[in-house]
Image 1 (cartoon, one colour):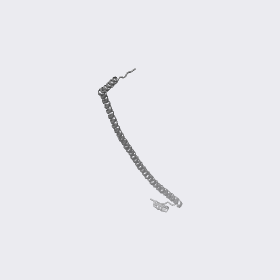
Image 2: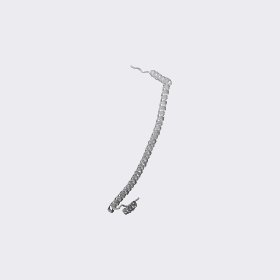
Image 3: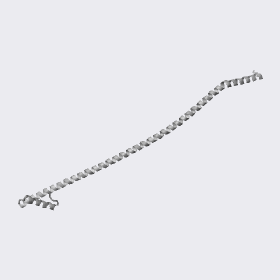
Image 4: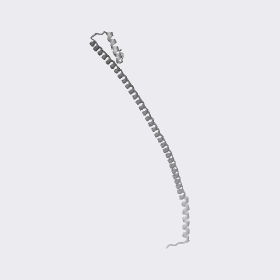
Length: 163
């Protein structure tokens, strides 16, 4: 069985206290210093990480702003190019319409001129045939002056003077 004597208990407590103070002086001081140094390092790392996180968020916001500006600029450039294209299309369309009107007017003018020439030729031919028929019917030979006067009179009746 174990015996507890007060002197053993006293010396055991005294040994424990001496050991505690020695260990506290030699060991705990160093351990606490290392723990304090580590805690300080962790706090610095956390502070540094938070600062880097703030910088990264600021850069992200800046890049998003630049991206938004770039998208707006791209949309503006596209709209401007569409407007220029539309104006060029409208200008070419107007030019084509003007060219078509000009060509049509020229064609109508040429057609009218050709028609007039054809009508004039036909009238002259009819007048010559009428003169021939009249000469045959009268069995007389007409001279050039009387032919000319007769043709002019006939054309005046038809509605166009002879040239």
